[in-house]
Amino acid sequence: MMIQTDFVPTDIDCGDFQNIEPFYQALLDRAIESPEALEQWLIDAGELDAAVSEEQTLRYIAMTCQTDDEEKAKAYRAFEEEIVPRVKPLAFALNHKYVDCPHREALDTDRYHVLDRNIANEVELFREENIPLETQLSRLGQEYDTICGAMTVTVDGDELTMPQVTKLQEETDRPLRERAWRAMVERRARDADAIRGIFDKMRPLRQEVAQNTGFADFRDYSFRRMRRFDYTPATCEDFHRGVEQVVVPLYRKLLAERAASLGLDALRPWDLAVDPKGRPPLRPFENADELADGAHRIFNRLDPDLGVLFVELLDGTSLDLATRKGKAPGGYQATRDRIRKPFIFMNAAGTARDVETMLHEAGHAFHAILCRDEPLYQYRNGYGSEIAEVASMTMELFTHKYLDEFYTPGEADRHRGKHLEGIVQVLCWIAQIDAFQHWIYTHPDHTSDQRRDCWLALDDRFGPNVDWTGLEHFREEYWQRQLHLFSYPFYYIEYGIAQLGALGLWLQFRKDPGQALDNYRSALTLGGSKPLPDLFAAAGLTFAFGPDVLKDCIALVEAQLAE
Image (cartoon, rainbow, N blue to C red):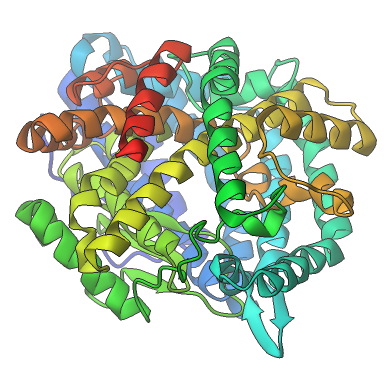
């Protein structure tokens, strides 16, 4: 199989459709006269996909780094509205050419099974009438990012971004925490109607996309679109039940202990992040440079090879870590597919959670680097989020031992305990958000009141034992802070699946660090070239996330917390 190609010029401007259309046409016109020619055609098509993807990614990075720069927002919108809708029919035509190729069946089954399955799925799902709907959905997602990126609050005379005000929830001064929390939710409430309006526009568009493709609802469509060939909605509902039975009791037990330590009859929403023993907040770093330097030292100690990989990110073009006004919320790792190099985006404000996020996103970057020698773009780019999040969440746990790069020994223990408690909390939140999405899209004609009632019922089922007296209207809209509901629908259960995988690798690491690291690298190097169960198997894991697996994993977490 040939793995070299110079099909697409390195200096091509993919922001101009006239520059890229001839390459699509050349691929469509090319005669494929042997299995070897088909393999080369797939590599050339992947190179074109990578070039177009990189242009889109660069514009997305620029826009999210500065949402208040209209020129950057305009450039991203232009690509989404002018390039993407014109590329999609051509990409579909390429997929159809592959599916119809008589040499397809002669390809090595083991090598091409996943690619073949994925392309056949894309052909089956493609509907040209969905292209303008998807463009509208992208535009609405950008509106959500812009609204959230513009949010700032004033606390005691200081204007703060949302990550900065969240940091105040760790302060031991309870009245300050309450002022900060109220300022934060009141600021969100000012845009609650606008955000609700965005979501209410998205919902029927998504239902229309599903129906155009022959699905009864957006949930069933999403499972196919996201290539969930190895599990079903019923499997996710098993996860929800497992979390309810196994994780929620531990979560609420930990919160009851927190209330007792704080000397409170009941916790209020601003009592969830402060140290229960009254110690000052963990402040592991002062600025983004310190965060990156500390992460580099950790990776050098964990595994020198990973330390070398992290150095690649310290080139001045691959990190944007500090929070600031006008920056989109959240954090992500995006791969610039043509140069095969990761980019990490964060909103670091000096908290322990920022350290976790840095280590997490670095895990994603390692994944992208470890599989970048894969010749097929479809495998470098096409691995499922379930294994992608194993790559990132495992790094949060493997690095526990080396947190003294940011802390004193006592502070490092506090961070470890806080992180493990966070795993318990986030599993509950994942189940709540995922169950919410299942309900939303299997009840496409629901009203806002019905959605509110569903959210509150789910919060009773999975949420913290917190006193919301007088704050009920804030609780009703708390789901709006979850970015995935707007820009990445149904992408959230992956975090739960991956968290259990990461805990499994951590258990290996505690017994044999070298073997666990080898398993980690073995799985990530495969990219998306194998089905999910095989990728998990390469990491020494079983692909499962029901109640039994939850019991084993939570037993490990509880034992570690007890230590």
